[in-house]
View 1 (cartoon, helix red, strand yellow):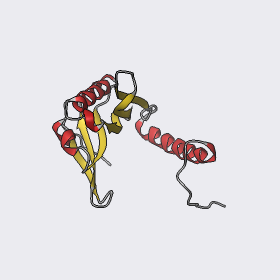
View 2 (tube, one colour):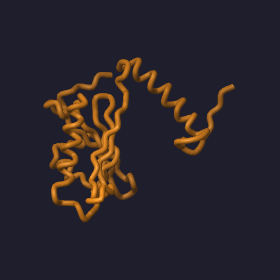
View 3 (cartoon, helix red, strand yellow):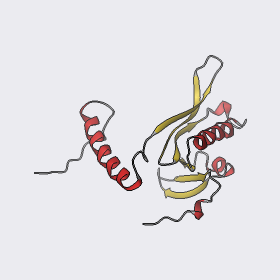
Length: 157
């Protein structure tokens, strides 16, 4: 007999990891059957900001898969902002994405973070979720790196 249970989100170790791994394996098999073997292979990327001693102060963390670089985390400490480091770090990540064969970069940011910065860097809003968290908006942004506009690519279902 099958049943549905509600549980805490799967963690990264122990019994919980088994549930996550099972779900991921099934989803990956389905996705690759549609898009081709290896199309969802994931490769991590970090562009780090370090102090003179080599300690990490901030940076950009993401991964390339499905032909896109997904920026998961991007943080620069307040004392190091507005001097061009963010632009330089994102540009380096974009260059690496091109070297990896990615057609674009996607990321998410909040209305209280840096949507204006990303707009100046050529990113377009492709989605928004209001009241996430309440009183704020979460933006999904993307930028093509292959010379095409986001609108030139038709989505067929």
